[in-house]
Length: 467
Image 1 (cartoon, rainbow, N blue to C red):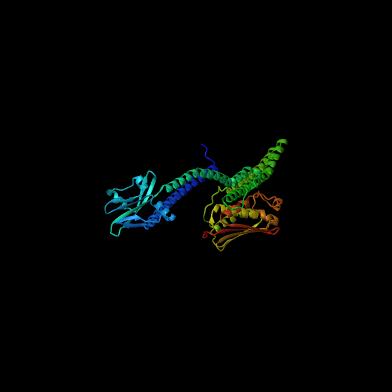
Image 2: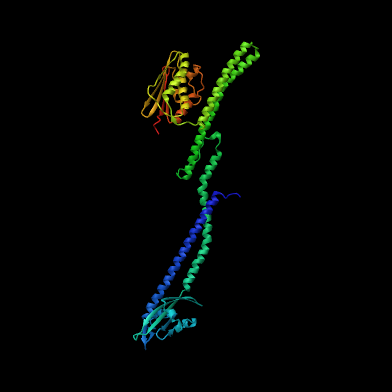
């Protein structure tokens, strides 16, 4: 079964909450109104009894009502108050006087029931509806005790409560309909920005990843959602851009050696050379194949690094021993070009990281210095501590890097025009991978250069004691 939409669920939740609140409010209001009407009835009955006591006098030891019938207000009050009225003689247990309404209702008490009438408030159900009596004790000058009973009809109160309940029963469904309708429209209005985000996201393709989702500027949760998606799309746009650049650079770098391989193979096939010539062609092709193999290996390494598939160890590294090992390894290459390779590292240096990857980074930097240094030049590697950092400086007296190329030296496949002109072997991935290694060790790498005077590369790594 398909789950209801978010708008429907929000409307249902809003209506349910409103229903509970409305029911709670109505029941509370009903209770308050009922309590207030009940208290008003009791207060009115108390006022009637107190007022009626003022018109009672005793004749021959019996209480009798005395008032001026010619006074309309007094006459109306007495008639209205004595509609439900009777007096009992508690001493002899007899009914002294009783109103006609009480007589018709048959609400007189026999002596055995007088104890029931001793309560101050007494509610009685009759054919004319519920009545409430207030019992008030009076005493004659001779000491005889009487009970004055005055009643009031509770039917108006019951009718008012019934009308109030009926009003609630009518208003309840109407309120629910209004709540559901308003909830439906409010949910739709609240979800409109979400729909805008969905429609904008549906239009995004690889060809227009530069577009962004609309942000209303209210700084609410929907704006936060749109900004989060925009940040994700920006990263995706950057990744796709790098992928396009990678594919273009790969095509450019692979085209030349593949064309050379194909050209040499075609010439060898067309001109039926001697075995010696064929061996020379095959040797040249093997060199190109080796170059392609190294290129593909470097591309795979960089791709794994940037995708997070390469894991780096975190342990102390003896940097001085590592530099000495690299100096001994690269001394042969430097000597072949008549380049002086000098290592200056007297004190122990211990950064924290992955020894093999740090070795790879330093190898790239020193190897580049040797490659781009002409015959008779020099390369100097110096290691030292600077505060809590381990610093490796690599100087060379090579061809240098133009100022406009310095900001791009760490970009993938980038090679300055001067290096291309010198026909130095390389594809522009070494420094890109070196920067990734240094960055993931929490360090920095900085290049300064002057064309024709040489280049300095500085690697700064946190020491093993830094957390």
